[in-house]
Length: 173
Image (tube, rainbow, N blue to C red):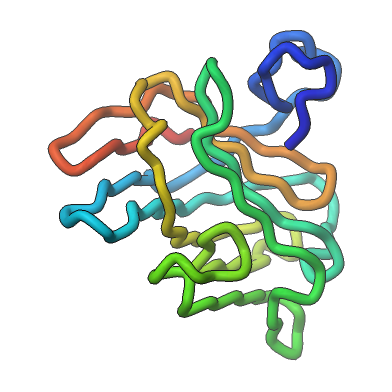
């Protein structure tokens, strides 16, 4: 989540990085930005996806993050640090909950709930995310979603659709 060459583009959004270290796609379900209906409440970002890194990732020991960005810069970004997730005994499901995020007092960038489930013999990583915050910078269909696990980056870069309640990202592979 760094603009390494100071051109205003981060990670997979940076054309200077294309072909160097390609960012595999986020597959599966749509994501949504739902704008708050009342003054004084927060916008909501809901995202579901699945990635296939091709190698095992130690979710519990790595930083895990999400970012929505557009050509002029980030819309929102948030991350969980090692120790934030709680896992089941088999270390195949990882969960994070911060109930204060709904009120704007969360400890991790508005991330309210996050879940990562490892399946297909450790080759597929499905995630669900609910995050609250100010998503007013979401104003263009050419936004991207980037999902990070350690230094592995996955991207959804298909156009978003504007709706009466916010934005919807679909066209996942």
